[in-house]
Length: 384
Ligand SMILES: NC(=O)c1ccc[n+]([C@@H]2O[C@H](COP(=O)([O-])OP(=O)(O)OC[C@H]3O[C@@H](n4cnc5c(N)ncnc54)[C@H](OP(=O)(O)O)[C@@H]3O)[C@@H](O)[C@H]2O)c1
Image (cartoon, rainbow, N blue to C red; front, side, top):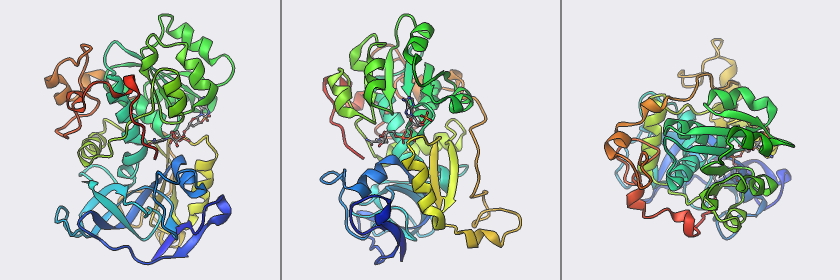
């Protein structure tokens, strides 16, 4: 099959279209025909070799760690051939290829009302945001500061925190002001003076920080917190630990994925897909992510430019949605009143707040089942 991947560790020069053996399904890995894949900063760290020892690589390796598509074969028997699913790629395999292998335990169905492109955004950025909020036990009455609020993790953290009823202050480039505000946050432009602007908005300090930037930005954010333990960083977990917080313990759990997909299908979370590239333009997608200033998520579809060009109506290769588009999330985030029934039923959490960020019956949904706030005592951080 064709993949967009790499044959050795390095920069963009080691990337390209490659022939690779078809992946083989097993009882632990579902074989899926890729329809959409999310691309994330971590994928470039995998390609460069920065993730050696954490993420298994088998050359030639496709880029990408999350995908959605139609099941080809599932020896575990959980999914039927042809079902639309999404999830995390199996060890040693990647997402940018005609066929992908998804870990059975990290695979869920794409519900009616959600697209493969949207579902492909869930395993990395959206679930990371969810995991951080779950650890921080964010709820009504809290003020949450989100650093990098216009990027993949940040903009979805804004939506989810608003969904939980929190007030959100989002720091992002000036060009992302509209996006960040439409997600439900009070936007503060990044750059000199951002911390004073946050302090003016929240003179009593903030209750939690979710960091997708790292460096001096998170150091300065720590000074704005009431409780230093309330930092979670996807970008700089070691630094967050030094500051009293931690990285984000990733669940990568099919139950959580299913809950998040349900929230997407209901419009509670609106994945912000700024740019969708056909697989044939994967290099351009990589460059967007590598810029470090991406807006929301970057998604790649199996459609090629050629596939699309013959369709005069600009509809996608599967006829469902337009696969090459640019848009911002238009609607404001969901009102706190739309807290899920599970949150309402669950009553207040240990700090008198809604119990979990997401709805539904996924087994990882209740913080009680995850034990005490993990990051407070230095949660295990799993690198992407
Ligand atoms: N451990 C995990 O499982 C995991 C999972 C997901 C992500 N991550 C890591 O988390 C980090 C963020 O991921 P992502 O997907 O959100 O990346 P992303 O989509 O590139 O977003 C990062 C955002 O930060 C903004 N930014 C850069 N400098 C900033 C500053 N000084 N102040 C405020 N915003 C700034 C960028 O744009 P503007 O400057 O234009 O605002 C961009 O929107 C990466 O390091 C990634 O590897 C880890």
